[in-house]
Image (tube, rainbow, N blue to C red; front, top):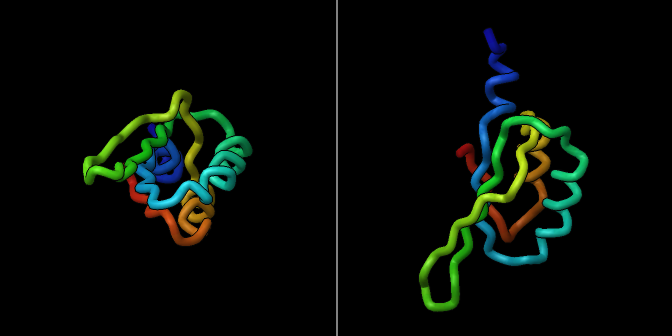
Length: 82
């Protein structure tokens, strides 16, 4: 039986990206996170008002600390449980 912490770490995140300046910091955080079962999905608003969504290849242990660090990157993104 999984612990609550392990179950939460296996949940993915959905990152709504408003500006690309956050991407290097997101990449750095994910590179430091161990592999696991959590998926990362990006949502982007395109110039014509349409939205695009894509899932990054791979999966990570998305602990509460990793999720908090993603949320604390700053303006230009929203991070939600997926």
